[in-house]
Image (cartoon, rainbow, N blue to C red; front, side, top):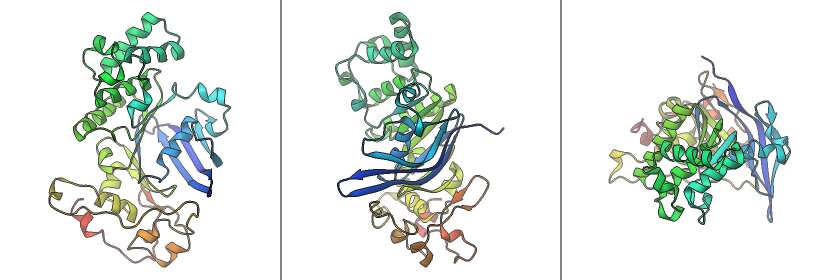
Length: 338
């Protein structure tokens, strides 16, 4: 069954004015989110992942500008909505979980009051109804002893519990879309796995669409339906999760996958992508990854590659897929992992 698109991002360009000049942070992003799916956006810090989702929430920094493009949600272009109309969408229809729960929670208010307040303000519930629903949400996100936790303050909870509370607040208004921006970065590995399992379980139960932002492909291996790989403000490859993990085609995706540690990596030196991302004050003329890629062709420094079709669901923007390009084998370090 073909699912409906719930969000369509079309040719999005975002820049930031700085003391040094204009930074082109997003450079023509096209991306769709379908009903009930989990889409992971993966890339290094500064690739544009979080900026893209901040456009969806209408929370760009003051020096940020949407230069062109559309972000369609329920037939409306979010980039052109007045602030008062965006308030009716933010948190209610599109909610967000940030990576550090302590910056999202009010340290002077109890957990219960913070969840209940959201329900009273946005769903017009009475105090009694809000408390009942808050306790239900605390239980839903896997926190034991809801009555006890309801009366506690953020500092009395562990990092994992605080992140569960943030998730409960995000779900309080039954949003259609949940954006999880690096939600496990500040947590240890065991708690990371629990939070990922929780998000996956909630997605199954509530049938919401999720955008999962991360720099770590390993985090989304078992949670994403589709993966979009982002580099220097552009999507460079996207496809179903299994296509990205078992048939990657862009050299940058190869590098991300090769740098993932596994159980056999003990004692071995981990692979690292050489070099660093380009300075987007001066966007590169061709493929932004060319200067870091051992597979770069002459044309990579002259022209940006278009998307080449690998399957109906899998596309990659690399000149290596052109019919006249030399045939290149997967890096040895990656062959061992796939």
